Picture 1 (cartoon, helix red, strand yellow):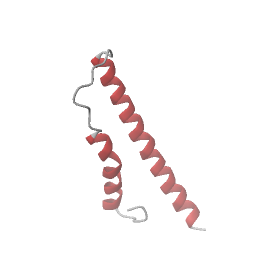
Picture 2: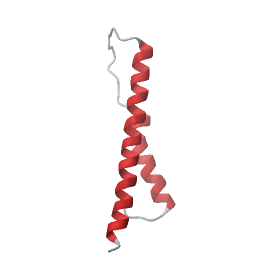
Picture 3: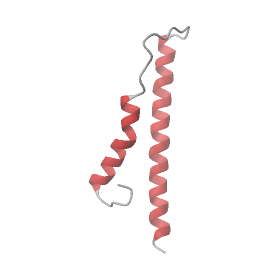
Picture 4: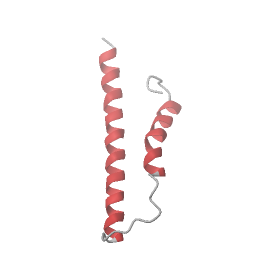
Length: 72
């Protein structure tokens, strides 16, 4: 997927990057906590979005730099 130059490969790459963030990690059966559920939910959303944006940006920059430096 990395070295393909097609729309299908790009979409497949984005789907593979997003899959762990969409599916998520399994939760334990019983997790008692003193953290309010709204705060927990905001944290999970913030971490998921930040992680997805980081990896998408890293992949995009790496692809652009690879393309730029592999020409010469």
